[in-house]
Amino acid sequence: MQMECTNSDTMYIDVISPASINAGADLSVCEDANTVQLNGTPAGW
Image (cartoon, rainbow, N blue to C red; front, side, top):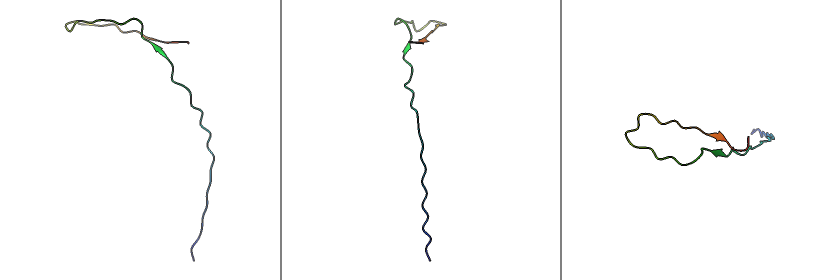
C-alpha cells in the first residue's frame, strides 16, 4: 500500500531596494601613498 502525502505553505517576502551610495568626488592616489582616507554616505537618508 502506497501512502500519498501532500503539503503546502505560503510565504510572503518583502524586497527592499538597496540604498544608493554617494562616495563623493573621484580621487587619484599615488602608489606610494602611506594612508588614504575614504568616506561615503548613503544618498537620500
